[in-house]
Length: 126
Image 1 (tube, rainbow, N blue to C red):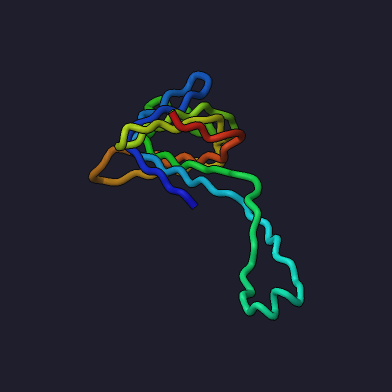
Image 2 (cartoon, rainbow, N blue to C red):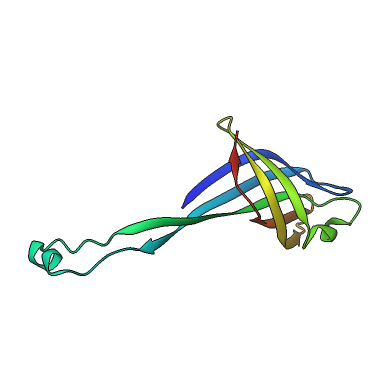
């Protein structure tokens, strides 16, 4: 599992703009067990499994300020174009579906909104 963190980014939805304060991207790859059983393996006493890389997947979690228009929940279930810049100068982006909407309010901070995304295609690094 690879994890990237950053402090800048944008989520582009139709008629919605979010001011991001942080994000996390989790990129993973499936693996399939390709081990074979044979008498040569038993005699060699190695018994190591073999794996083949499979499909790749990614998710993102974005924290932002709650929009003042109150229309943020409209993002849930829709697709967005994400562009997420890391503190190391790298940028990651791709198309993703918004799968979670979590507003939070604190007495000592501005209202926050956490959005979660499921990548719908390739995660691109620029």
